[in-house]
Image (cartoon, rainbow, N blue to C red; front, side):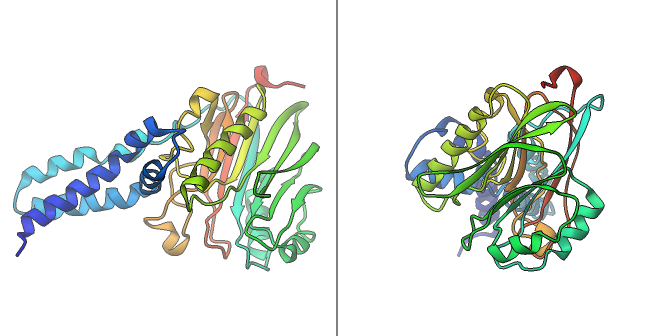
Length: 310
């Protein structure tokens, strides 16, 4: 028979190992194989590991107070996440929303109500079916649109209240689309990308996701740029490793966005807005339940005048 004490030690060690996974994943960035893939999959669940550590430590502390020292590892999810964009307020504002609306969705009403309240200038939508795309035609306030509807989970749309130039629909080697355009903001041209890669269901999918994300970021050039979408990756994943070196940072937060069940409790943040070094973060939040298995994200950014390019 196992001692309850040893069971607690085992659970605590498992939780601590999980919290340290982002540090183990980072050196394996760019590696292909089963081990990097499995470690990366496990690294996403930082909030679950944190909950396990807290519950284990507090349970054991009823008998031995030294267990409270285990809580020193509690800040790890914040310390190991991809760096966030620096804040600032003296800049031209731009609000960006990203929402996976789910392939089976037909009712754009919840999305319409949220956008009417949040008023983002740019909206990225994922899993846009042909029927949902047709319903989007009734959505007011976004005259500039780039839509690639599909009956698979990879339909994608880019809506804007500001002018969009040079719209492009690209595809990877598997035919999965991504969108690119130039957004005109107060006389400045912003490189804008919308992306929804294949979930990392295999080592090949894992490598493809990371590679495509980096290719899109590099293709955005040296000027102000944004990328948004359901990236099927968390800020602790190999997909986010090295973004800072590329001149990019995370603008969205660490609150879980999938699954939306229970307001995302113990879920993972896989819906994101990424921004080039030119931007400053004004605010970031999750949106309401839109009837999908994802929760949307809403980010307000600022572009300082010196970084504004015509």
